[in-house]
Image 1 (cartoon, rainbow, N blue to C red):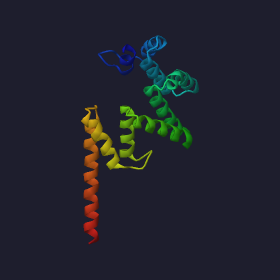
Image 2: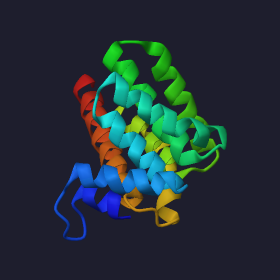
Image 3: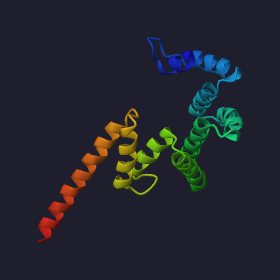
Image 4: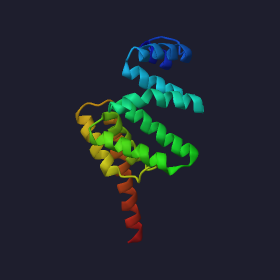
Length: 171
């Protein structure tokens, strides 16, 4: 917990990446899976080949145990690496992993898929599908789901108005 709070500057702590890394390394070496994933993501944020390898090495044993948070972190790493290197293969691999996690009901993956459907950058925009996902999550009181649902509903209403105006102009 301390590592994550130093990383984000939460609980009144001054943001300190070095201290965060130290606490996360200790917790990770003691078998705390969440700390290992947070440390891997911290390594990925350093944007060096060596730090990426450290992060991947931390995630591998957790992925082998089907630890969803590690699979999700690796998927996001794959997608961002694919975009950075203009290589479609890791993007597809990352998307497939996130979709698999979403089908298993993993909430962060469901939120990610919903956001992808809203943005339309990685997959084609599909607001009705995003609305279904966010409505379901909002019913379960998932943080940010209600706000995301409201955004999607507003976008759908705006699109509907725009298409009505376009139709009216044609007549």
